[in-house]
Image 1: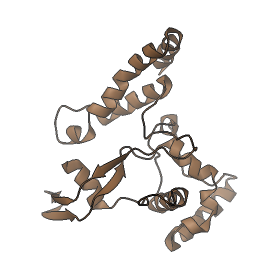
Image 2: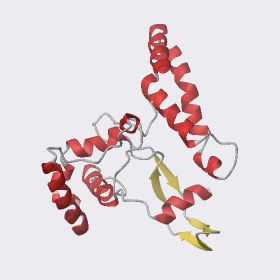
Image 3: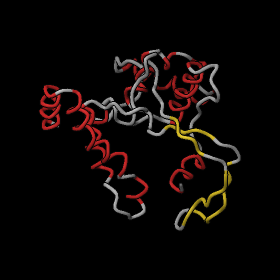
Image 4: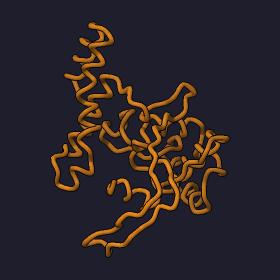
Length: 212
C-alpha cells in the first residue's frame, strides 16, 4: 500500500497518461485473473492476491465502472446481461446435478456492491425506514437497534477489525440477507421508472455465472 501511494504521487506529477498506465496492471489482475478460473484449478490469481490488487487500485484511484458512485451520487452499477437458457446446476459433494432453466434474460452487477455504494444507503437513513424491510427484517432490525443504543453506535452494518474491509472499492462485507434485501428495496425507489428493478440474486442467478 505504501508503494502504491508513492506510485500514485509520482504518476500524478507525470500527468494523466502516466496515471492511467499505472492503474492498468492492478485492473488487469482483477479483471482477467477471474475467480471462476481459480476455483476450477486453472491458472487464476488467488483471491487474496486479487484483494491486494484492489487495495492498490484504491490508492491509485479506482475508476472502473461499477465500483463507485455516479454523477447523481447513487451506486454506479455496471449491469451485465445474462441470456435465457438452461445450464447444469449442482455437483458432487453438494447435491445431484440437475438442469436448471433461466426463462428470461436478466442483468446482474459485474461487481459485488462496494463499501462506497452501500454507504449511500446508510447515509440516506435506510436503517431507519421500515418500508425497505421485510417482516423478519424488521424483527432483526429491532434487535439490532437495541444493540446500537447500548453501544452508542449509529445504525449500519458491522465491520471487520481489519481496515482493508472498509476500503471504498472493497465489496461490502458482513451484510446479512435482511440488509441486502433492504438495500435492493431502497435502490428500487431510487431507480423508479427504469426497466426492471434490483433484487437479491437467487442460487440460480449466482451459479449460472460460474457456468458461463
